[in-house]
Image (cartoon, rainbow, N blue to C red; front, side):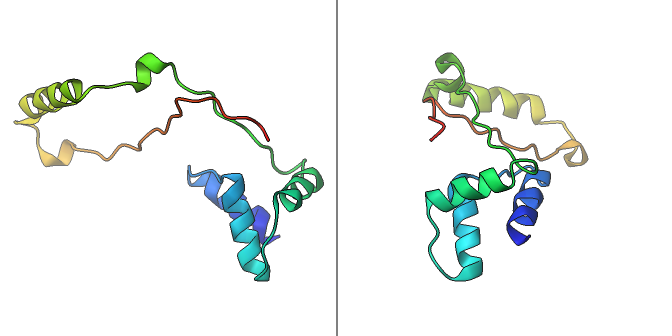
Length: 105
C-alpha cells in the first residue's frame, strides 16, 4: 500500500510523518479530503505495521535561550573554527523540540 510505503520511507529517512502529513498524502492519492476518523481506522487496520509515538517535551531549561547566549556561542565557535580545514566541517541534523506537552488525540 502506498501510504504504508510513504510512512516507511519518511521514517527511514529520519523524517517521521505527522498525522496531518499522512492524511494529506493519502488524500492526494484519491483526490478527496480524508478525516482524522479515516486516520484512526487506518492506524487500527495496520496496527501490526505502524505505531504512533508522541515525543516528550524537553526541559524548559534546555529550550530557553537568550540572544546573548546565541551571540556568545557563535563568537566562541568562530574563534575555535578559524584554523579548521573545510574538509573537517560536517552538516549535522537539527533536533526538533516542543516546549509544551502534546496530547495523544
